[in-house]
Image 1 (cartoon, helix red, strand yellow):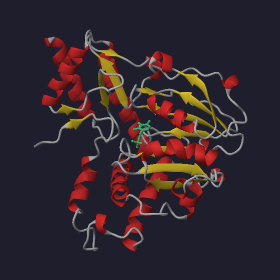
Image 2 (cartoon, rainbow, N blue to C red):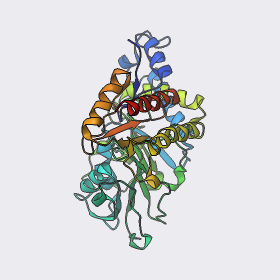
Image 3 (cartoon, rainbow, N blue to C red):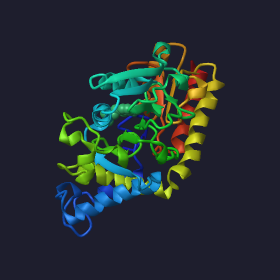
Length: 359
Ligand SMILES: *Cc1c(COP(=O)(O)O)cnc(C)c1O
C-alpha cells in the first residue's frame, strides 16, 4: 500500500527519510551486528547515538550553555507534575495562563503542590483564542510563570510571549517545538512530548536553565528530579533508547531543511494555504480566533457535524487520514507539523474544493 498523508495530532507523521534509514538499520546498526533496540544504554555505541541527538537539539534550538538538555520518559503529562515539584519551593506560588485543555490539566496538577493563579483564561470561550493578559496581575514573587505555546486541540498559538520579568517562564512546547525559532534564553524551562514534532512517542525533551536545578521539593521522586537527571546524563534508569535514536534521525532531516529557521517559512506557507481557502469557503469555517491561529493544528468545521463526519470519511478514502477533530471539540483538525510536506496540504485543499462543490 502507498503511504497516506497523515494529519494526526500525535503520534504524528515523521519524515520518510528518517523511517527509511531506521528500516535499513533495523536489524544491524553500523558495525555493531545488532539493532539499536538491543544495545545497552551504557554502551559506547549507544552513547554516541544519544550524544548525537542531544547535540542536534542543542544546535537546532541554539540552546545556550546556561541550559541543560534532558531526554526523559513519562510524556509531557509527567512534566505537569515535575514542573511544580522542581520549582515551587520559593514563595510556593505560580502563575498559569489557561489557554487550552493541556494548559488546564497542568494547572490542576500544580494545585496539588502549591498555590496556583490563573492570570488569564479563555476557558469560558471554549479556548478559541489565546487569552489577553494584564501584566499587572502577574505575581512578581511567583516561582514560575507557565504557558503552552501551541494549543493542539483548539488550534491556537501565542503570537507574542508574556514578559514575566525575573519570574522564570516555563513553556509546554509539545506541539510547536522546532516549527519556528524560539530564543531559549528567554525561558526557564521548555518541555515537549516528542510525538508531535520531534520523533516517536515515549521520549520527552526537557530544557532547564541551570540555576533552576536543585530547587525541588523533598518529596519529588528521584526520577522526576531534573538535577538528579542532569547529574546522571538522563540515565538514572534506562532511557527510551530507540525513541532517542529515531528522534536523532528526524532531527538530522530537520537540519537538512535548514533547522527551525529553514522550516518556519514552509510552515507559514502551509498554514496560509489552508486558512486562505477556509476564509474564502462557503462551506468550511475556521474555529480559532484569527489572531491566535496555530500554524501546526488547523481547526475548522462545516455547517453540520454530519457533514464534518462525511468529509473526514471521504478524505480518508483519498489517502488524507486522521482529520477528525479532538473528541472535546469535534469538527475537523488538520495537524501539519514539520514532517507534513506542502504537497499534502495542497492535496487536502484540492479535496476540500471538490467536496465543497458536491455538497
Ligand atoms: C500532546 C500534548 C500533551 C500530552 O503529551 P503526552 O506526551 O501524551 O503526555 C501535552 N501538552 C501539549 C501541548 C500536547 O500537545
